[in-house]
Length: 499
Picture 1 (spheres, helix red, strand yellow):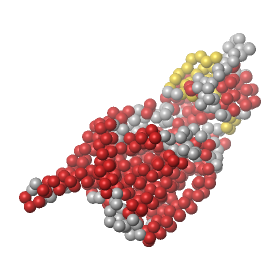
Picture 2 (picture 1 turned 90 degrees about the vertical axis):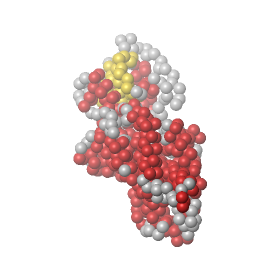
Picture 3 (picture 1 turned 60 degrees about the vertical axis):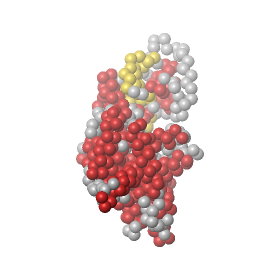
Picture 4 (picture 1 turned 135 degrees about the vertical axis):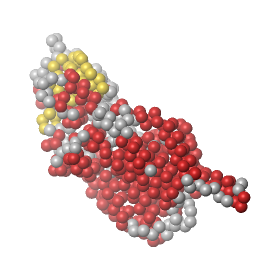
């Protein structure tokens, strides 16, 4: 049932009519050949290499927006089922049902179920590894746990923080020496398998230069996203989670639901936030897999409340007969989850609108299609805005990308290579009009880019051209720049403030 609910919510309005920038990268890289993807990974996005290869196989069937997102939808459904199975094994079947349903209706899970990125797959792998971890602690083999977790880390290297969460769970369970030895061998194998990825990705750390140091407000926001952004849902789930914490430990060597759920929910985000105080690395989607711990903790608290209700019922019955709870209380809990969906339905619906993402490149491409004509000169500011033309090439057919010197696929880059500063000035000097597909914040001088080529683009546009008509779509704009008749001496460019 949790998998079916998650699948239904994931497929609901899956086609938003446009991709945002990160999805567009997945789409255009996934359509490259395997050698071209391999060439790209030497310089950028090595952490997503395995995902791009998976998408290459998926998009070979049909290159479309919906197909791009289907792996994430299926992975989210699998995660909901795995959370339910964890609850069943750690508590009882009805608690597993509640935990799985809670995961399925959480807006954060639905958000990433509808994105063509690797995070929903990482969450599925991490939850599967946690289930195998529980089996191994109870006497099962550690080999499967190590293999699944190693594969998950190759989908995204920050999944390695799951090892720390499992170590805390072992400590809470007061595991014996044999269990620690088995886990230690599996953990060492995972780290060794991930080492090549770490060495390569360290050289590509400039990709994360845009990140900012997380604060206490960041942590509070993540907790709200884990438990439910609607106030009524959040406070009820928080109360139940606190009740669940009353039984962190059980019999020696036996992990409890709270002893597994709490470290899974808290340790990876906390460690990444602490590390980010020195070098910012934290984004909530990097620890999406930690969300699986929240419904387990809430279900644990709900089970304790249900158990108390059963005991009170037994006290008032002749002979102390217990309440027959299966299906009564199980269905009551499922109804409570349905009520949470009602409270959060406006959030779920709004999340399926194109405006719920950082941008909508489909809308930008449609605006470009209405403005551009064959033979028009086009400049992308910054170069990453070329993502629009790479993902939606039709509106740009017949136009001239005046600064591009090498295409994205053949150059092994995400957006292609552009002319240097001197060549850039020469190419733009011969133009009387040019269309700019750019970031309005950059064109409006709200911040100065670090790249000298981007600074040179802005200097030429500000000094030698005048902005005319434009079509605005969110933070992106398609703007016509015309060289005025009285262009000399050029007016001084605005003095932008630093970012």
